[in-house]
Length: 309
Image (cartoon, rainbow, N blue to C red; front, top):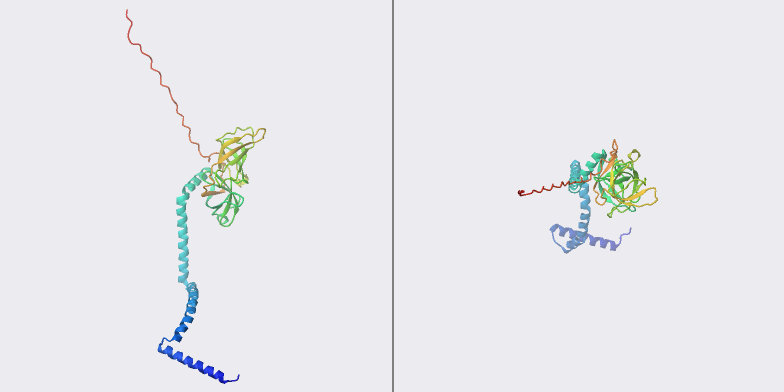
């Protein structure tokens, strides 16, 4: 490269400027040149520090050895403990009564159950609820679901940690039932109005000659192998009988025992009863108080005075 006079001049000027800046910085002078440099590069340095500092801290925490790992482990344990305490408190406040009733019903029926909580409700085209137990807990499709009042539905889908229950009130649900106190059987189907309240069931009794009246109760008839329904689970009470002249069956509206608008704690039957409980799980009707009134005998009239002769 050819060395020109202009190049030598520029290099000389730069060298003098550098020496001047070094001298001023060495003396601690607050020169305008240095101030200008700080104004220009200071913000850039601050941005670089703000970006790099969290990364550096994170890197230090990750590579900080056993003490950092112990801290993370302790925090995870504390978090798990807080979650457990919160779940226990929520159960005590909201669902303890439902759980107690559920255990009582399961005990009377001889059902082995797994308790679960409803964590979501409603489907796109069906009345369903989602429970907080799944395949990891041993839950399988086509298992009966009940609560402390009676039949809720059946498990239709299972993931690792959750399961979906088709409610008995859904329009696509059909349950084999038996009229309490007899061997008359029929089928109950849903009307699809559970989650909005006021849902009813519809009974079709197969024997048209059976006397059917309001107040009679129904239980599940039971499926082969107890899947999807175990026997003896309370279903509901006859509200009104529909006239079907000339029909080979009878129909009636049924009020379910379970309130589908307040589902909280439910039980999935993971093992059916050793013996059919028949009607023993039904809620007992309030005893009728008979008052016997015994009329008091009328007093015998007494004649006063005597006969005179």
